Image (cartoon, rainbow, N blue to C red; front, side, top):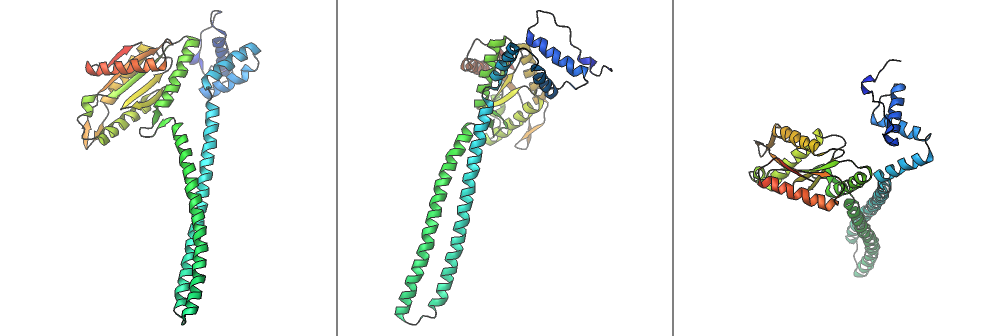
Length: 330
């Protein structure tokens, strides 16, 4: 058979390598043997299919890892879907009630137009009073129905607003900048810290923001937001698929670099700095020369998320004060 993926050859693993790594190599070898492109999707399919032939103990070990990684994500998605369906239901009810009010309004107009025509032909006061009473009864019935519908709309609208607030509170995106939000970043870093404690590897958190002296040259906050949006797009476009990018507030962007030590994090900041500096970014009709400042914290699992966050913020402020591209810490 032609060695279609010979460039992907993996060195033989010895007995000192843990069982998970051995199994991963076994899956990889199977893909190569069958001529299947070893991309993540195919690897995942083969991984779980071949897992069925392994021992119960090993399968439990893998399941523990997968459970830790998923961390209730499916349950969150199901809950969000339920809330969205309920919200759509409320919107449908509001539209239905609005349609009823529209029909009642037309009905009231028809009754009023007819009354104007009839009044013009009524000669006696007695007949006029009688017709007026009949007219008031018709209008009253329509008005009562309209009040009921308006009340229903008000109550349904209030319930939907509360539901939307709940959905927004569980959102994982910063809609202004098109990246993840602070809440999601916190959850992912916490999860990564637990992985690091369990499997003993290193990841890094990087904070990046536009230098203060660049921002102060802009006329207003709107221009600063436009500039930060450009930075967010560059970070998204040039980052790795595995990197998690979030806006943490006040123009600070956080990056979780999984399985990346401080050396890799330093290279990441230097790369972003060069790309951003060489990008043509126009704000207020002028091309802006962008300079960024950053901080790096290696995650080795010996601190809480809050401690790492505080450390990174302090290092970012220090880098700004000392006019440095970045300062690293642990």
